[in-house]
Image 1 (tube, helix red, strand yellow):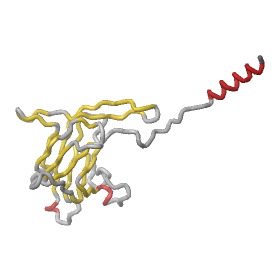
Image 2 (image 1 turned 90 degrees about the vertical axis):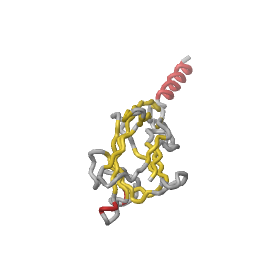
Image 3 (image 1 turned 60 degrees about the horizontal axis):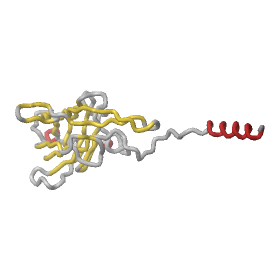
Length: 188
């Protein structure tokens, strides 16, 4: 009988010392960013690369307040995007996020630099992922009435008076649940 009790005690203590690993798998989906793809206004089926695009959040400095696109870049290039697709974060604690998009931001000619601002309006939902990973937030772009019958989930403005460089903006997918698809198409 003592052997059975000893075995049960050892077995119980052995099980109680086992703990689950609280490490979030890097492949676990987290809060998705808004995916924006750029197209040629003259040929809408062709992707178009932006050159030295800098995206800055509202109330942030142009010097070091941009979205980081290149982790390994130096202080100047880490804030620049060169390509046809970018991903930007939305605020998880607000119902809107405003960004300034600076086209050709490194051009030595100040007249060639153009700034447009977009305010994205949305709702968000926190979703429990796991004990190790915590929560992630998903977003749904919400229409804002501008003038009947038009209703859009963003407000595009000319931030510097040089005219809009983003000539057309379309919402392709208002539900931002993954980064595997384009949410916004911009034609310039």
